[in-house]
Picture (cartoon, rainbow, N blue to C red):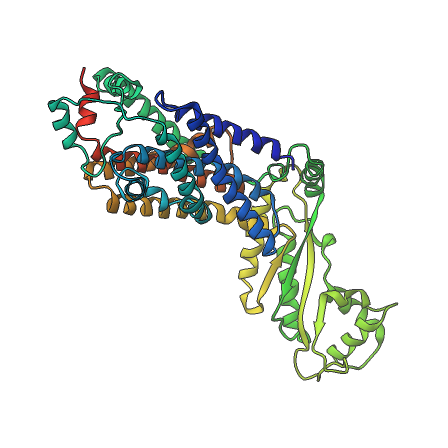
Length: 493
């Protein structure tokens, strides 16, 4: 619940941003307010539907899920700009139904908004937002009279060069507006040279940051700053991890331990675990076979190895009843040991401890787990496996780098393919691909320079933010081939 005020503030910022940027002098303020409201209500409905469906299906809630509403509200509002922009460029002499069709089928970006984003958000775009847009257009245009604008013949010829399927609104763009002035500024060679220098510095810093970025998990980033779990996580990492922890080693296909050579092989396995870095040695190891061989001589029995082992495990006073959880014998339905001619141990385990001291960290844990698993793989004939309470977190650290890189590459290839299919301009395709690559490098590189490590939350947020930025890039380059004469007019001094 602590995220609710921040999310409310984010919604207010998005609403204000849409209200200001969507404002036009020839539209009433009420129209801008309605469009801003529609821009935020769609993503909110998508977020509410998503969480309700997840809860209904029984999926547990976790802290990473708190990031999604903030990202969806940003991505969802982007579609509103695209659709409104495409709607304003339709032929106002046509009926409202034909304008809606032209909005979502033309090359002005409205149709592009249906090919990306959350499926539930696309559903609300096609149902709620389009329906609300129709009613709002009817309300606005009902009381507005089209101005009697006499278009000179020369301007009319220039307009015919533009996209034939999309005629500008009856309210033409201001040739001295912000966009027109911006286009004139960027045509100067001084501006282009300065932007080139900035781009080179940006790429250099981003590449350096990507090479320095570290995959690291910080427990304090997984919970709220004011949560009491922060103190618990601090105690675990500062004291408990440094003092010692157990690792469980399972031998799932043990040999016949009644033979001495196989006993020595198991003692060698345990000894190698005790000699690994940060290990606390023999005194920290719990291994039932050592106790059994030491105490079996006290029984003065002529029974075989496994029969005596069964007796020893059932002796609660002088025997090894406390080891029953660490060794499993083959037994029948009456709980009797099955035969004595073969290895009757189904599987067994032992535990040993390690202490990381001043080096206690997630990276050290990952290093230790790699050492344990490497050693276990050397005894594959015994099917040795390792378990540690935080193994699944360490496995995430191992997969974050590869998953992030593969996701970025697949996303880039997918977007390049989409650009190839939807943008009829080779220069625009190449430029958009370079822009997407620049965005990917910049996001990770600058975050690294900002001392932000790559962890599960960072991976989710950066991948979605990259998709958000790529969306703007593709939308912009989709529009460029159809600007035609209008862009030339803006660049005129």
